[in-house]
Image (cartoon, rainbow, N blue to C red; front, side, top):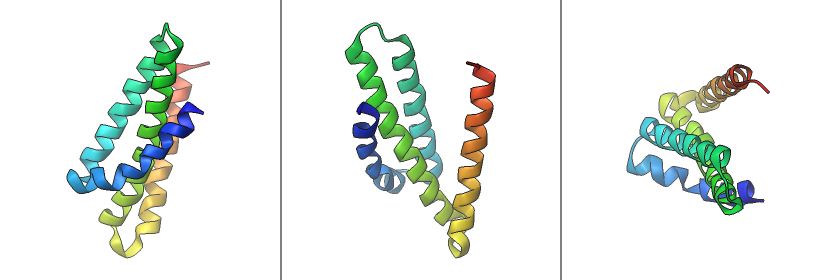
Length: 103
């Protein structure tokens, strides 16, 4: 529930891109995912884990929204294909990261 509730904040990705740039917004969101992962993995109190999960939901949703907007900037004439490639890169990165970290 905390991830989903936090994900609602992801709608602010467009505003973040407007204030910075797609690449800076992506890096900020990736840093949020990293911070959230650290909070969850080191939490000794339940509220810290819930906070980390909510932050993860917000950062991850904003990150994926940023990828959609970035695709439109990179290839306005074919934004759908650009977005698909960016999401493919994200998926491959998740799979490789999961394989490296292990079970």
